[in-house]
Image (cartoon, rainbow, N blue to C red; front, side, top):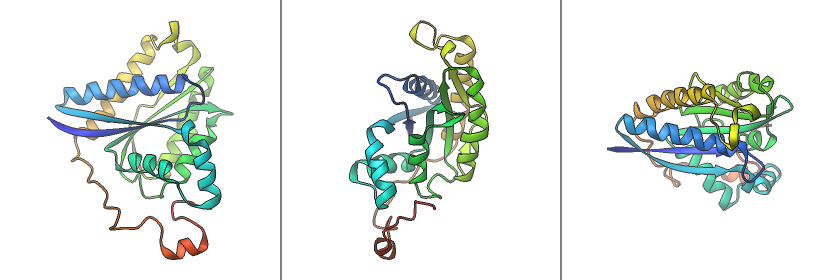
Length: 212
């Protein structure tokens, strides 16, 4: 059985959070779907709330510290990505956006991605299509057709028991598993082959991954 790595980015603010709960549901379903396709999954979770200060420092200094750099490398080097955010003011959270702002603009090109979001009411579900999908289209990721949204009413009894949500989770997981299983494993990056920050960027105090 071959192995693939799934990176899971969750930008929930609470502990626990509905965002992390949805991320865990999507991850488990994707791992099961990969297993059905003869592929074992290694899962690495990135909780962005743990990097809130690191991300702010990265924005103003242009450099990621070792902790944030490790999470960036996890996402960039994974075979597939599950990205889940709470919806605030009809869009993804600032923490979620900041993390993808500090990535190099080409680092997710072609990477299979499953999108998920949570919010208090179902009227926020359109943010998946008018905010999240365009962001990953700009990054040239390969986003699966089914995005998964969970509103408060989907979390009956403290977990996602809504039949409609369960159906969406399994459909999206199958789509991601098809993409991940159909590609060779991602090659590990050589940190010495293409330095992240050039000497010129060091002098200017900026990093190629930051735009604007």
